[in-house]
Length: 310
Ligand SMILES: O=P(O)(O)OC[C@H]1O[C@H](O[C@H]2O[C@H](CO)[C@@H](O)[C@H](O)[C@H]2O)[C@H](O)[C@@H](O)[C@@H]1O
Image (cartoon, rainbow, N blue to C red; front, side, top):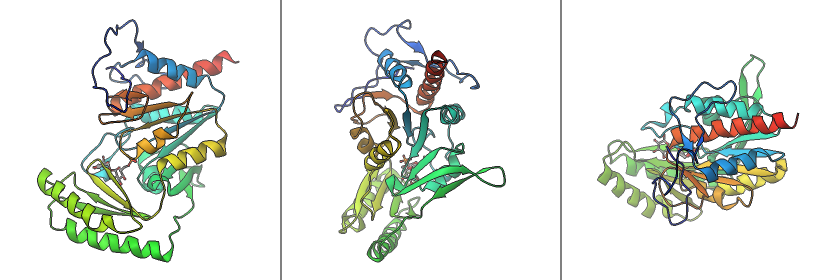
């Protein structure tokens, strides 16, 4: 597998001209404590170099989208699971000194924590930036989420209730389509529906409830998110990096909402688009499997950088 630079013009997912196996680094080599991935990925040299530079910085923030990045896309979001290699690499990174890990997702923070099994100390930003939380040790020996509830004004709560009612009424007409209620948003899911009825339904929802004043609309992968709060993953990531005072950030995402996060990154940061589609990210990998090799490589490089400072 090969990682490719992403570009606003959406470069095709083909091997780099002239790339040789010698030029590529074996990113499938596991770091200490990580079992060998079932595949060997060759990260593009420029991505490998960027990861090496990032790993050598003082304090770093690793920001990760969940669906389509850590967990492959599936029909039913309740059955999503992180790839085991990614889960181990994320846990390993979270335990290293000077590394902050944050999951940044459209999902609810509690949902993320339940699905991701993150170690204590990890952070979560759910609902596209509306919910901030932290995984902490719980008295029973496990972990739990510590998070502020999402606060809506009366007007926002009313709008959310109306969006839910209207969207559910429209979705009921299309087999397979369903509606997810989130603390600050309503989401239409069309992945399980037939393609044409699903697309017609998406248009009806965009022209109907989504067009209401005060609704922030994001069209993602077979989803239409209608939020009643003005938040973005980019604002949240920017705010968190400032609060932590980190020296550099890695952010990886696969969907439209992740573009806001890529946009707030700068020199010395690393942005990675996972999968197809236009992107402002600097690098691209093909899928969550290939991205797991990026995480393993970052873990390995950070451990190396740490050892060399001993
Ligand atoms: O920001 P993300 O972590 O990427 O979350 C965005 C949405 O992800 C989920 O939906 C997506 O993944 C589902 C499971 O693979 C898939 O069935 C759906 O079609 C995808 O759009 C989640 O269900 C949404 O709530 C998130 O907003």
